[in-house]
Length: 408
Length: 145
Image (cartoon, rainbow over the protein chains, first blue to last red):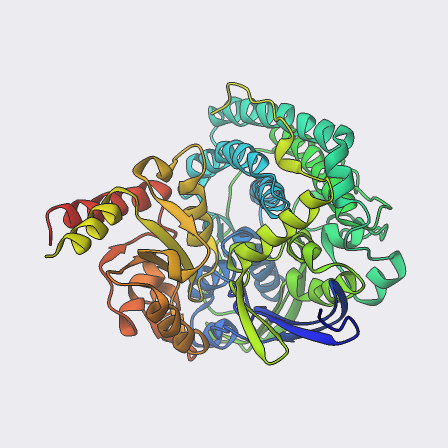
């Protein structure tokens, strides 16, 4: 019988090659409860910021787009907005609308992706399969509108690279309608399914005060009742001309984060419809200089995961002097440490997944050390452990029946 | 070839289990690998199963350029995969370093560190390309190359 008082240290990480914020958690366990969590950042760093200084602004755009393959438009737009501000470029209104359209489609694809991953982490793989199937509709749309499923390369200095043709509009509307139907169903599922409420409520609690104190951003902060959204607070692109609600929730737990993301999906659909209706005619780009005059700018952008901040300093040449990226997951990692405290080890996968870190990269090798001997536990194994732990307590999301329909 | 080895080869061909390992990718290829396993593309119809641990897998699907920190871990994970093993480099970065080549913390493609059996280009490699790459790799196995 192991001594319950003894603390067992579980290192989780450090592979998290998402953007610049691969993370490692040192989890101290007392029995099954997590007593404290220490964070370590800085693994798997590629050196993109330094690389930006050696490349021209146009080359940087492609490099910055690949900071993250899920919110690639977010990083590219945040970067290009800063450069345009320094250069004093006013981009055409149509370009602003197209940027916003891609941004909202990206949010749709990212939130659907999150929904599936969250389902997987709690042993609800049916949801993963359904939501990823629905997500393929958005990916098709991206391929049609931008030429690529991911890393769309839609932005260019002074506007966007591709126009939206009038014939494409009904098709976009059709897909948005289909996705809205599915999302309504997912909301109904989340609200009425008791198993999901049992599994997600109270897990990963983060109070409003803590969310603000630890600088949480995006859906993580909004699910804790902190009403922050860069799209409304500091509008960029076409957001000041769109009508939308900032979704908040006061559950402060993983359930709240699910509700917020599903609500945001509905808002995104409404925004996409408005964009298609209001999109002005005109050019899609203005001519931009190769050399950017000296100056500096900070650009804020509400990525699907939260506020993304880019800082650019120009020195009058065709290359920036300094580029700094603060990606949203970095802002949320401190909150994760707080959420995990006093929780169970079995909840770790879903709590970490709930901030939507660039996920597929999350850690695979976990060594559980205790009493001199150690055991290696993969992320998958930890997920299975969590699923089993809850199943033994009568919570089994895999029994939930999901209704399909003729989509895709 | 003895009988046991033949059996393993046959199993590997009919149902290769893959380990997905991110060596510093931007996430795009990783998402596309998962997308290839979900209903639209359904790589599983070729018997391909995604596994969580290197000790259970036949094929390593690596995405991303090799960063200096990941290098030793990549070698360690590669050594944990039982023989006969194959490595597939998914995406342009895994093939050559791609857009990240020349960055101070990036070594280059996967083949700078471990031997690679198949390259799937694309930024990111689309699920169709990934399926095609795997199908071609399985075919070469069948021909006993």
